[in-house]
Image (tube, rainbow, N blue to C red; front, side, top):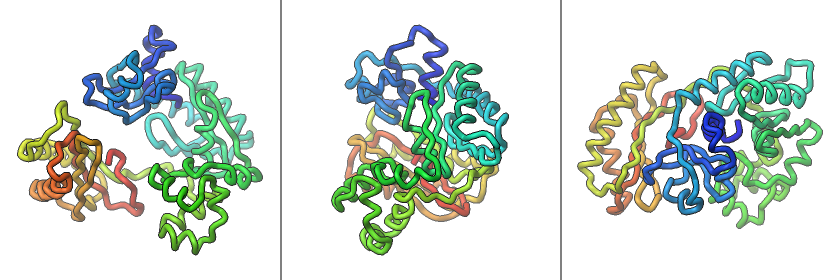
Length: 335
């Protein structure tokens, strides 16, 4: 979906049409959940602190988050997907993989039909990527946003990947780009010049993953039953907190909420316990300890460890969570 939450807010309030809109906390201490394209022209984006968004775009209009509305719209869109395939892997409320390989129609034609149905039935726009595998489809889905689509056929994969900037690959963030740039790598074509042994030697396990990704290889199937890998709760403070005892009180409350959520959802067995701190300068640290129990003392010890890493810096955000015992390991969504 195209800036899903913000698009819903503009649809429901036509007076916002054409204006920069951000969804998220309006106190100045919160962060944007998303921003529409008018706001993005000024550099605003999801996960940006509200005060920074206001600096970049003083005229930005902030609306509160309405997850109940977003979930309802997501269910409508999921129902549209279900008319075409049962092989649906949701990634979030506004994004999903669909396996349409069993259909006789072309992927591009089906994508146009699905996008048209979404627009007519919800008043919202969606963009699509059509490709032989999930990785390339994901990259292609961002290519012609908003309200567009791109198809990369099997015979076009090699050419598409050679010219693709490595920044587009999953897992290549700012630091990764800097590491690759130091090797003279800017595109996947540049990366393809290195042998698997060379990349493993320079970058370790990540280098082996990049060897496959830069060639457009991805064997993952669309997974209908996605297992939750983690669960967490966090609190962004209205003022930076430099009082450890105060943080302990907040941690105890969040730990109780996480424990209750784990029991209520009946998830897999807990594999490890996690505490995250974001400091006043926006640096962050995560402390983790293996184990299935959720005693308060364990979380308190993790908080002490994370707190020491800050060398006395005040804290902006505290997060508490667990990782579950699953076959695959994955970074916590909020962590």
